Length: 335
Image 1 (cartoon, rainbow, N blue to C red):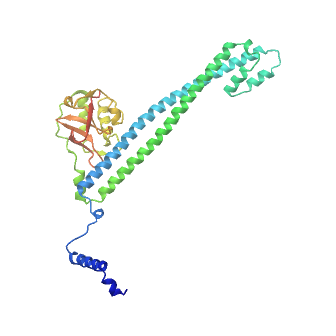
Image 2: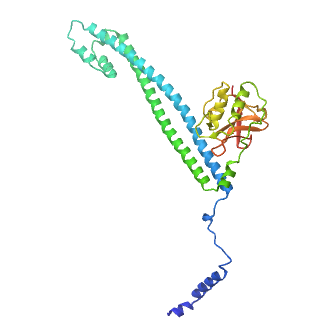
Image 3: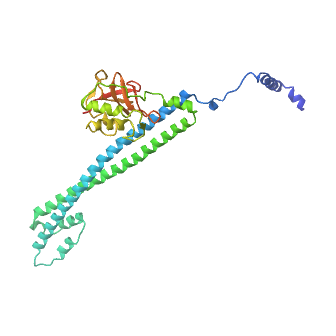
């Protein structure tokens, strides 16, 4: 079949017609690749907020792990001290048994005694004692005491090793969470960097008011000190892991504010949720801590009139916002 013949087939005529139609309407229809479309400011804002929240979740997990590690290290220190004391008691028991053996064999061939005394391993020492033919003839009580002290030492060593392993696990968790925080923050910064200055400013200004100098909060006592301290930080920077005096994360701000009032709080929003009695939303008073998201990963301070002060995120810093500007979980009253 010649080339001309091929062009005259029905399939060829259809293909040529389709090409002609496409050429005729090409100036009217434009094919748009959705992947190449620029995201809107709202889309970028939502993505940045999501990244900030994911970073904050990781940071709060980091705080929780830090508190857990502190507890483990305290236990470990105590366990090691117990282990040292128990080892000393075991050594005293060993010396008493050795003295009894020497006394039992005094004036005789001490080769059997030598076999016992030269064994440095506590369990081997106990095994040697149990096989001595003369064992039942002397100091049954001393033998029993040594056996008990050895078991106690083994228990303490086992506890120490388990807590040390837990500490290592938590330290690995800390490194993982820190990496998550850094990665999410870097992604958010990269998104913001791609926006024009005006668009970037519109995102940064969302979420609340940076002005708090004219807010009069009817609070006295320790709650009043905490509220005034928190409001004095409005406009300060948000930095993951910071707890003042010039930068804060969410739990760092509430910890700092209540610390000024003489009330110690842990540096963790989830741990702070257990720092006082639970308060219904209808009973909120200035100074109460309010918590957000499930699982809890953000905390602010109620200042009255349906408003809170909180360290929001790296774009907004410390500001005043409505109570229900985030998914509300509950509240507690410290002090």
